[in-house]
Image (cartoon, rainbow, N blue to C red; front, side, top):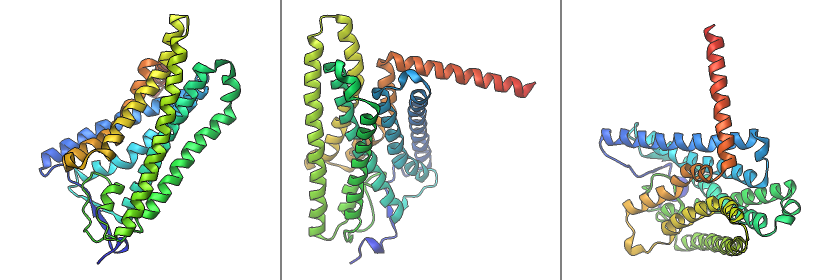
Length: 320
């Protein structure tokens, strides 16, 4: 019987067997990764550089972009590297790092989405008290709480998962190291149940956050529908609909990924669902926010104009 300490590496799921399909997967993943880097990088730069965006909503959006970058950078680069080099191996420490950072960024992101729901609630339902309730110190504390909750959750899961004896081989049916896949290799029923209990607590905490978000939006929609001005209603909806779209996308894929019936579970379906859950949101979140937010679009347009002018000036100076 072997345990986690005797396993030196794990084998990730291979997307394809032929060289052509491996290169195709590499190009696809590279395009998605570059799109996520560009979109989230532009949001981070625009919010940091444009003083008009130095408000609580955009401060939380900047934190969300950082978490999205961290999440997709945890999973996709290794999957990309495995395709052209025709390898499935990931070291034991690399697998532990992937587990930790994925749990960290995902947990922190859901906590931050809950904080953003509260920010929308205060902005629309209590506009006269927004400045006092959402001051800079309060915003920093809430963002720090979201990051801290993610760190604590990830630390507990990683420490518990990688202390479980493993004796069912080292093959994982996913494109990155995921806690449920490692639990399948467990040979200790008691340790397995301990981690399941910890996962159940995380699901319960997520459910509490979900209820908080739902209650916030019920109150938000009640307040919006009572507004006498149609222009005010449109502005309020433009403020909260991008966040609601991100929450819906995040929760729907996460719920199906971890709570779907075992009767419909299969390796291919698990891979597709986890891909939609871990890779697609960080890529499309910048698009969702920029499509509905005029201030952010203006800031991004100005940033791109400055970049183009700077590039042209540098090229002209270099050529002369």
